[in-house]
Image (cartoon, rainbow, N blue to C red; front, top):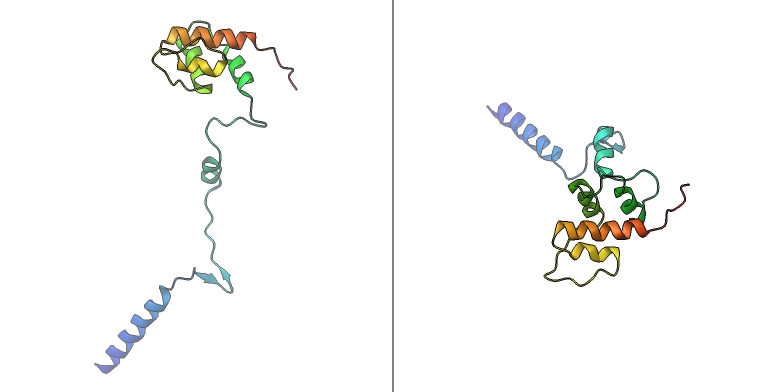
Length: 125
């Protein structure tokens, strides 16, 4: 009986020491857990991140001109570049960023079209 109690006490104390705050060690180095490569890259990059240099707003607005004119897809493209934030009665847009204040989709589309078409084409590198 004493022998069983002694073994139980030793095992209990060994498990208490194993639950220390230190990370598990292999020799004198901490044990490292390796994550799969795909999960690390997916968490590091946003889904729609451009490859290379980030594109300017002008280039992204001009890319929307390739979509059929007057369609919901082109407006969605513009809205992805500059999210809408409607105001009750906006004045005339002074710049492309002011187009987001128009509540009606047709007004917002024509506003963006006017500014996107007036931007000079940038040279491609």
